Image 1 (cartoon, rainbow, N blue to C red):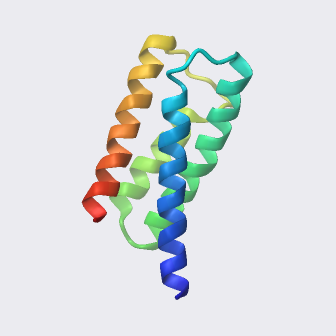
Image 2: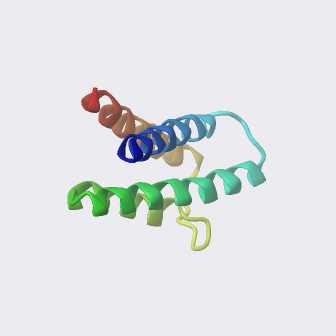
Length: 102
């Protein structure tokens, strides 16, 4: 039972990340993007940890790199258009992982 709960939480974190990253395509105030970056940092960090603990170092490295890319403390200035492309690419990757799991 406990293992199923952990898998469910990982699924929920992925869905939340998909929703908040897609919301970046909307015209939101700057503060909302900061909140999204912080929430994404937490979500990607959690997924990196979970994949590392399950001995899937490749995915752990990818999610760790995404946490560093998205983090709100030392910002990477890519411009709105490029960030939208990055957000959609991340969403596609996460959706691929969700579909692959089924």
